[in-house]
Length: 117
Image 1: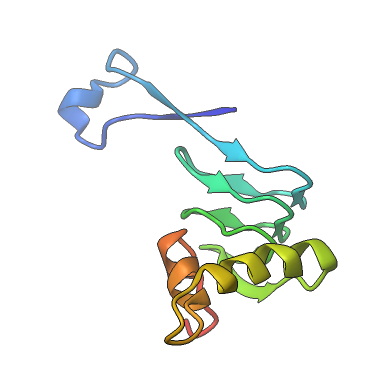
Image 2 (image 1 turned 180 degrees about the vertical axis):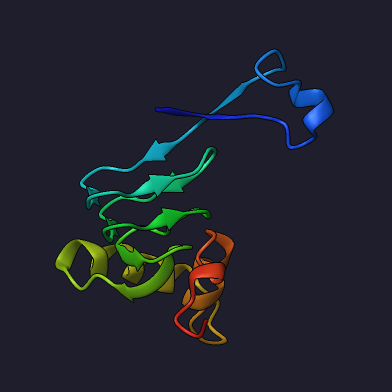
């Protein structure tokens, strides 16, 4: 899937005569996209994600999470066997100094959608 975008500068945009660009949108397997969801250009949505109704997705979404709102924010991790296997592997790959799950989620673009915002 692709989404259209254009330059912000009005002189470059030049009404309808200026350039229009397309950026890819990547949607993982088994993603539930509720009604009226907007996904901006260049976004990656991970496997097993739920995008709540009316959400505007402005940043990449980590696998097996629920995001809602405008802008879309992280609500919770989806608890299921497949998600547990996925996050269990991430924890096993972390250093012996403790779990680095939060750091891994941040590196995958979830930091901006943390539950503390």
